[in-house]
Length: 142
Image 1 (cartoon, rainbow, N blue to C red):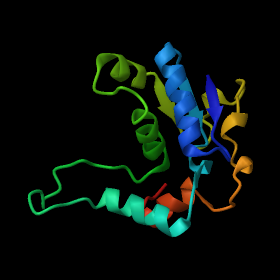
Image 2: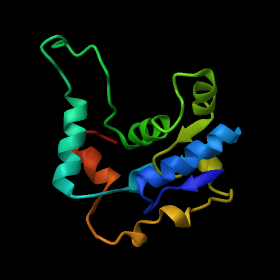
Image 3: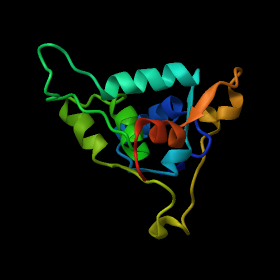
Image 4: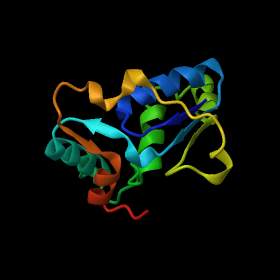
C-alpha cells in the first residue's frame, strides 16, 4: 500500500498505516513533508521543541530519548507510537514501513492512494501547520 501524505492529518494517517502494518502489509508513505498537524501553531511548536530538548537534573547529558527533526522521522515515530513496538509483533510490523520525502523514482509509475478519512479539509477549525514548516522551525535541513 502506497499512501500520499499530501494534505493528510498526521495522526489519522498514522493510525491507518499502523492498522495495515499489523495486518502484515507493507506500507510506503510518500510526500511526508506535506502532511498536516492540526492545532495552534505555537502550541505544536512548543510541544515538539520540548520533546527535542528533553533533559533533567538526573539526565543532563542527553542520553535519550531522542526525537527526530526531519519529516520522515517524525512520521515514522508517529506510526511507531501506534504500534505495540515493545513486543515482537509490533517491531516486525514496523520493519515493513518506509517513509519518503517527495516521491522516489522507483514509485513514480505505481498506484498511490490518498486517505479520505484523514483529509485536512475536514477540519472544522482551520488551525494547522504543515510538517515541512514545523521541521524548518525545529532546525531540520532537507
